[in-house]
Length: 377
Image (cartoon, rainbow, N blue to C red; front, side, top):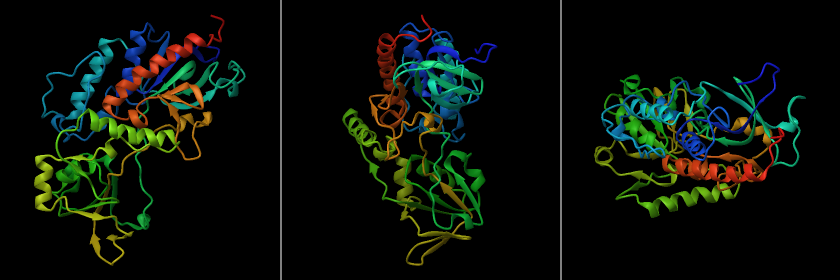
């Protein structure tokens, strides 16, 4: 894509990430007349189609997935519920890319995104922020897009909380992102840390084979009875949007929806597997200890403590607010009109990501119509 002189490749739009949000954005770019590899390019860090789904543990079957909405223009049909979700959804994403000719470049790492005026001497100068081109440095060369759709999600940034004594623990410490199934925990005393869906699903798998399990959370978990409809969904998204408006790091949509009560969860609560304890005071070489002196011995600490947005490559643009987050108007970063974030904050869900991809393309279309191209065309 890059010419032999080392210049960046000029394109209209660069999409970074080919998960749910990135593919939705690419679909809408193509639908509105943009041609892949000429007008827009899609880059993906992962080795194959599937977004973060391709890394899910093999015992997470498709019928146990906590919500999966179809990509625009193509339903996921006929999937066997007992197949691994990584295979089902990975295959679906692969078919989607092929069906719509999205030509995803992978594996490609995005190293940094800058204003082109701050780049190497050959980069085009730009005027005010929000006009001109960006400079995107990647492992396959540099691109100079007029707009960027960032759809990098969170999978590459598992969150490890700073807990007193963590460095002293003599056993294994594993994040839920590294979970490969229950067999690795057979016969072990396991402390599961975290109150989300992954914590519960992995705990239910581990409990039958482990010597003992203990579940700890910072806040009491909320179990949701009954259907989760449109009104409840809008209320959850509104909570996340408020944090983004304040320039704070977003919480995930899942974190504010509660845990859906299923028959498996009901049985696990009745049997004591899901008896929750508050977060311990410190970690010791042999386990964990609470303020009252109560201690639990452990061989493994499993951190189901979530993820943070993978946006470090955007740091040169200085988009973050003092609170640590990026303020946005819709999908657009308020500090730079050329940058849109999808699958971030309120759109960090499978249904939200699809809608955000369409919204970003619509607003970028207005930007491209308003801003003259910098290459003289």
